[in-house]
Length: 131
Image (cartoon, rainbow, N blue to C red; front, top):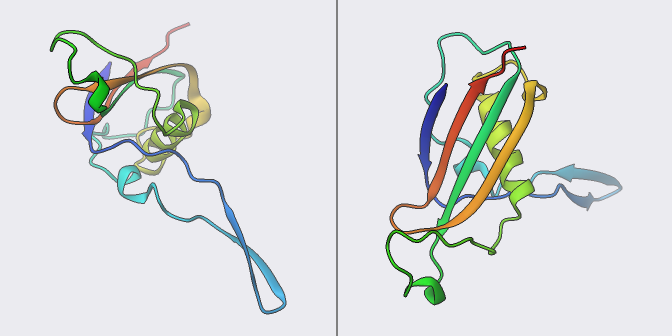
């Protein structure tokens, strides 16, 4: 098992944008998740080649209405980004960082969004799956 925390406000994978320049149409990535995607990742010496299970806890900045909850109480966050877009950014970032060969190796994924009491970010655990 490998686990680590990436600090910063989690971002979702942006949708590709289309544009027309003169007579040519093009598609581009707006890059709104680039800072989040290129955070520090503790990676193995060689990329993992086996099937993996990934657990992600997104710690979102606390909303003001949740400020009255007790420190030990976890409250779910329903603010953006959508959890599926946020997980896509994490999996793509781990692929770009050569953590594993390809994110198609992820055979099980669990994700949750909670309001952060301290530092926002994502706590990520990666487990090798044995047959």
